[in-house]
Image (cartoon, rainbow, N blue to C red; front, side, top):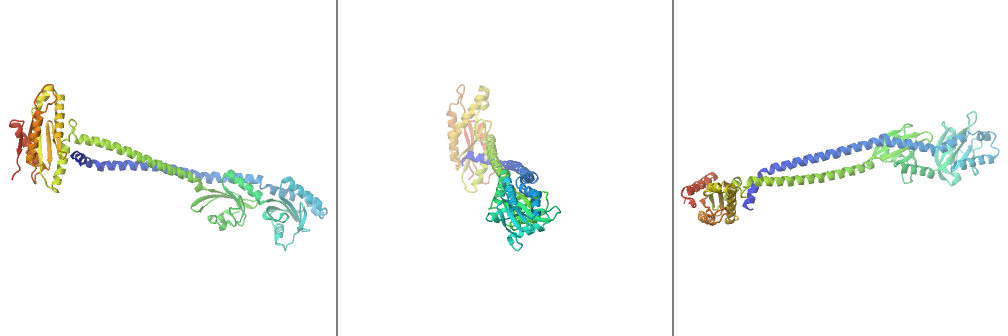
Length: 497
């Protein structure tokens, strides 16, 4: 490292700790500000999304779907109710079911007019099962597949919704609306209703899911999933499904008012809205994956954090550059003489102390050369301070050219300059000082008229165990001696034997 760099390093190391603390403070404030802003924005968005799902989206979706169900899925219930209260049907049954073609024609018209998959009537008196194709069979209490009829006969409610195989259509799974038929005295005389296929109802659910963007399905009072939009979705009982089993008991509560629940599944938060639909006898379940909805917000949070980190790095880089640049300028001002661009006295003392510290590791000779321009005040008086400054600048250039790379040259103050010669004994220092004196004497300084410029020089060698104050004092005394005994000369003091 050169002596100039050592000087700058010596000055800069004093403020490095303060600069580091300042950068840490700036970085901490930036990170804290960005984190606070980003996280606050995320938390607000998360809470808004959660509130929107729980308080608005799911209840409104449930209400809308319920309205759709009333229009689409409850229509078969209303048709069955009208059929059960039709006077023709009851009269025909009470008169002994004499003309089968009449009821067949009636069932056919109901099916075709309303677009249902099937229509049916089962008589409690004859146990005949009528449908648009005629008499299908006679139901028997011993037949498991006929258990639905005897269950309907014993019901306290007027109808039920049942998913079963349709014997009239190759056992195709069908949603039947089984409605009790009562005579005019309120006695059970049969069961009547219509059926729609599961595929038809599933298509309705699928259209709901596509429209509302949520998972929708139906559960019966036993907790069994009876209808979904897709066959690959839930099957069996909700008590057997992870996550749902946490809230299964709360879902099956016979409450027609919406019930808001939530459960955890694979680390995701699922919001659930359920309500009991008496017309179907099923629970309508609407689910929304809150974690999925939050993912775009989380991505935005990560993007914001990445941008914040980048901005923080850029700000720190700019701050570091600015601080370094300002610090270099300050160090330059603090360690360099503005006029001659030589190290000033403060910087010189730092470098000298470093050299003295090195002597303990590598002992060697170090000499000092103290110089003063003779009659410099007269130069300022005759030619002005601008010309005097130019002389100082030229003299500084001569010092640079005459000194070695390992030497330290500095402006001590005014017209005084000092030179530290590293690894140089007194004899060589005196020789170099004399050569420098002659060079100055012969140099044509740029002045309005030729004026001889000379220097007075004091030279000495550093002595062991000597303090820097004593060293400078001896140099000062030698320079004073050179000036008072004629100037333009080199005065030196030999090292004691």
